[in-house]
Amino acid sequence: MKALVTGGGGFIGGAILSLLRARGDAVTTLARGAYPDLEAKGCVLVRSDLSDAAAVRRAAEGCDVVFHVAAKAGIWGSPDAYERTNVQGTQNVIDACLAAGVPRLVFTSSPSVAYAGEDVEGADASLPYPPEDAYKADYPRTKARAEKRVRAANGPKLATVSLRPHLVWGVGDNHLLPRMVARARAGRLRIVGDGKARVDSTYVDNAADAHLAAADALTHDGPLGGNAYFVSNGEPLPVGELLNLLLAAAGAPPVTRHVPFKVAYAAGAASEAVYRALRRTDEPLMTRFLAEQLATSHWFDIEPCARDFGWRPRVSLAEGLERLRAHAGQGR
Image 1 (cartoon, rainbow, N blue to C red):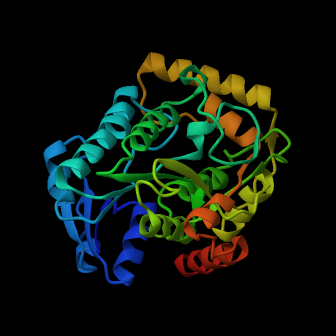
Image 2: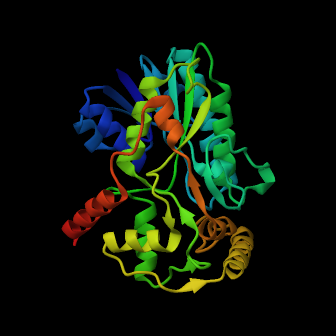
C-alpha cells in the first residue's frame, strides 16, 4: 500500500508513519519543516503547507489512502490561521484525493467537535455537534467544520472516516506533556474544581493503531463510510489523578493546588479579552475552553471501533505510563 500522511513530522502523524513503514507500506508525508529522520526511514517528504492545493495534489498522486493528521492545534491563536489550516487545508486534502483518484481518506478529528462545555459520559459519535456559538475556542470550531466536510465527502469515489482520539500522550509527545511539565515545575499548574471529573486519554500507539485499522476496513458503503468514532484507552480517570500520574511518569512534581471553576473561567475570560486587545498570539495560562475541559467529565464509548473495524487499545494506561517513565529516566 502507498499512503500519504499529512503532518508526519508531528506526534500522532509520526506514530502512524512508523507503523506504516514497519509493515512495509510506502509512505509520503506532507510537512512544513525538514525531517531528515523521516527520509532516513524511507519516506518521501513533500515540504509544503496545507494551503498549497497544488502541493497537496502532488503528494496524493498514486496513493491508496491518505491519513490527514496535520492541523493547527492549541487553545489560542489567529482565527484566520485556524480557518486556513483546519478548514481550507482539509478541503484541499479532499479535493486532492478526488483529483488524484485516492479511494480512502482517514481524518484525525477531535472529541472537542462534540463538546459544548458540559459533562460527556459514555457517549458515542451519535452525540450531536453543538451550535457554533457554543464553542469556546477556534480549534474545536474549525475541526468541527472540517470533520463535517470530510463526512459529507464520503461517496463512491472517496470513502472517508473521521477518528476522534482523546488526550493523546506518550513517548515522543512534543506538545501536551512538555507544556504540563514546564508549568508544573514552575509552580503554575492548578487543578480546576475538585479534580474528580472523569476523563479519557489515549496512548499514542493506540491512536496510531486505530488509524491503520480504520483505513484497512474502510469502504464508502460499509459501516465506517462517512462516520466518526471516538478513540481512547477506555480507562477514564479523575482528571486530577490522571494529571499527576502523567507528571510523575515524566519526572515532574505533582500538582496539589486547586482553583474553583468559576474563578478559573472568569480568569480565562479576562485573559482572552486582554490577549485580543493586545493582539497576542501566545497562549494564555487559562481560557474559558481550558477551564471547562479541566472541570467536566469527558469519556466515551469505544465499542463501535471494535464492532466496525476490529480495533481495541493494545497498550494499557499502566504500560504506557511505564514506557513514559522509562523514557523520562533515560532523558535525565
